[in-house]
Amino acid sequence: MKVLVDKNKCLGCGLCVSIASEVFEMVEDGKSQVKEGADLEKNKEFIKQAKDSCPAQGIVVEED
Image: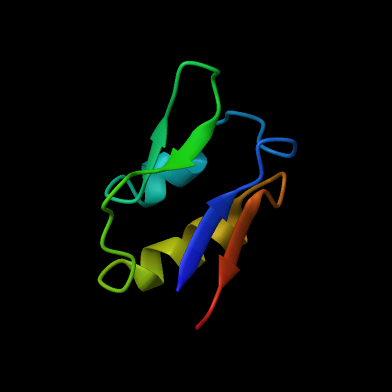
């Protein structure tokens, strides 16, 4: 599984961080990114919720 945040779409609202704080974090540019070393498999359901909730549709999930 691969998870990316499209920086061109991200609004920086922080909803993904609220839903999946073990996976997403806000950075200096005011946008979200995937935390380095995040356990994507363990947090699969939270990632799906964050992706589905993102108002900008800025989270991309690629299944292996």
